[in-house]
Length: 130
Image (cartoon, rainbow, N blue to C red; front, top):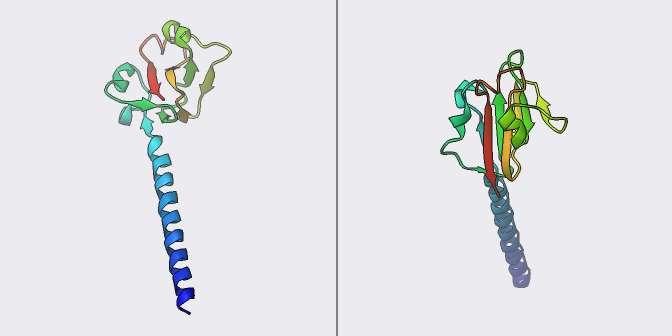
């Protein structure tokens, strides 16, 4: 019987150790990705370029774009689209008013594709580190 008790104790210790390791890995995975609401309480609106100032973004983080879909949209563009306020065939355009977009490593560019909105400052560039 004493022998059975030792095996049970070892099994409990191993199971507990495994549970702690899995819990830590799960917490680390959760901590890696953050969620940011673009424009904070103001949402996706004009003159938003400085919203990224002081924030650190990583690949895998998510941006939430809140806006009135009858007034704006969100388009992912390349640097040329950002600089020229244009949408190309390779751009993705979101129109729900509550869009969540995951950042890729490097520069990520977002504009409103409605006429003149990007020119009036409805665009952001986000650099996401690895």
